[in-house]
Amino acid sequence: MRSYRYLVLLLILVVASGCKKDSKKEIINDFTTQALINGNWRSVLNDSNPATNPKAPNTLYWAVPGCRQDDLLTFTANGELLTANNNTVCTEDEPPAKQAYAFDSANKKLTINGSSFDVLELSTTRLKLSRTIPAATGFGYLVYVYEHP
Image 1 (cartoon, helix red, strand yellow):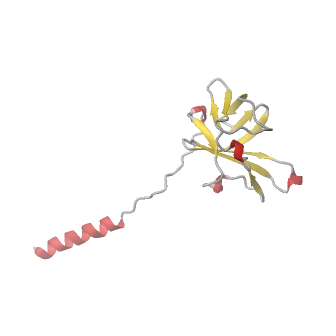
Image 2 (tube, helix red, strand yellow):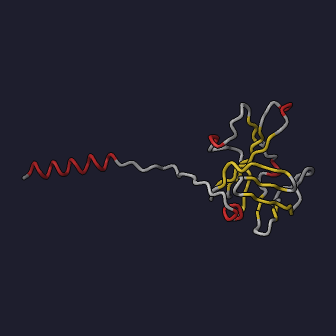
């Protein structure tokens, strides 16, 4: 009887040690307007998921100017993109505080003031956009990455 208890205890330990929690959260893309308008977005300087980038030989990330790193973007339900400059304001090339946007979730396209972007990721935590750029630059796509602050 004693050896039976030891066997059961050993079996429990083996099963328990085989269980492993995955510390990485899986990002589930949700290409809906609701995901886009749910909160503010801030530019980030690193891409934790480059696997979703366009399949091009050379992809360039948008180099976020220091004066725009604290900007918050808010997509509203009525088709307005609001930009809050927060504490720092660029002296030139500052986007308007209000811009029109249209989101085509079926084709994963976002148009902001006439400029079209492919939506590579849209989840509860991340928005990743890309657009083609002239071949003369030596790159095929420019990628923009945003996350909720």
